[in-house]
Amino acid sequence: MLAGGGACALALLLGLAADAAAHGGLDLQVPASPEQSKLQALFHVFNALAIGTLLLVEVALVGLAWHFRASRRDRGPRGAGPTRAPAQARRRRAWQAAFVAGPSAVLMAATVLSLQALGGLTPFAAHHTPTIEVEALQWAWQVRYPDNTTDLNELWLMQGAPVVLNLTSQDVVHSFFVPEMGLRVDAVPGRVNQLGFTPERPGAFGGACAAYCGFGHPTMPIAVHVFAATDGAQPYGKPSGAP
Image 1 (cartoon, rainbow, N blue to C red):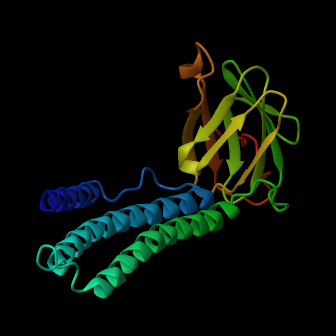
Image 2 (cartoon, rainbow, N blue to C red):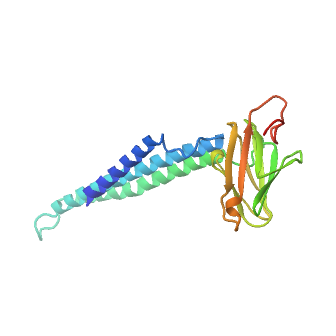
């Protein structure tokens, strides 16, 4: 059984490696903001922790098999009682310590790395200006820039210019989701949720509502357009000459 489990684990790891090589890695998309780069780095770290944990479990299974086999040898002849009880007790204590320390170390590492990565995504950073109001409703996104110009279902931002989004909803809960930007935040009626980020790559990045919000949910897209930085241009709003 242990040999079969080890073979299955090895086959799984080889399959994951082959798939990653065939598709150029495990990235879901090319990051378009520093925030998404941090999240993808965390994704890779968690993959490494998961694979390492799998290998440790396989090693522990083999070690337990060896431990119990040794325990049977230590019992001595039937009725004679254990012949090497101190050694057996030391091995048992070592395995107990490993089973406590191993998962604790993995969880501690995951917690610290998550806090470090997510700490840079705080929406209340004072340097993230300007603030753009985004209001969701069934089934559209209304965008209002600081100069009171508006857009519907699209957001125009300058490359490299930090920005904060204030998100709310007129009716039900929606979720603003643009994967290449690493953006996902709920729009909740009666509440304003903030999200700060910096677009770093010019282009058009598609998104959608990621929370079911009624019959028209599939037809609630959002497009984030990032234009190249130019001297004197304001960092938001559709630039002149844009299609």
